[in-house]
Length: 310
Image (cartoon, rainbow, N blue to C red):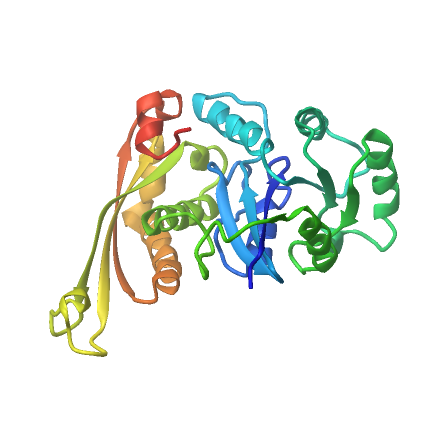
């Protein structure tokens, strides 16, 4: 029986592994993950039960130097997310120096007087014992509540991390319904899946200028044409029709996204459809289009249209 809740923010620089950690702890893919920086743009809630506690993780965008209005929005999300929570996990990479982003986050979180736990991620990429000088350097820099080496990829150290985070739980009922793994609506998750495939398939600067909008979403019956929602026969297959518009901020990028003879767009659509079908538990008919919205990352109205609003 859930009698406590703990709201925990996960903060760190881009590519520190915040979304990978969120997915691993929740046991669900609630956040997209790619090797590209600034993959996460919004704050994403990951929810799961741990003993008598409902754990609520706030996966945040990578902390970076903003160069666009979108970048400013993402940095603002991080700043808001480290206040009024039960604790913050600062996720860092296993390097023997404290970077500028980490210094700024330590200052920011320290000023908010929120309990701060340091998690040194990617333990699977370094030799045994190599984390010790990193732990020592950070311990000299700030009085963390705890410092834990982990691997979000393999799960090493996560039981110890959860044990510590549970100590910050407060008495209270569930904040999210039982079985709910994230606060994101279906359309947002589908749009993020498509953007993930674009990030993986495309190179360099193009992915940062991409946004995805779900412009059509409907269900219909299978071969018999009867909708399950309108009382279709038991076991009749449901097909979900999804229409998605991919926006890029430069005309020269549109042809790259589409690819020769539509090859790139087809590849993105095929890989995205498979993940969307797994997520929805139904067959999916995915149609995609590409449009140009120049400089949308500096347009307040366009950002709002894509869901990047505070």
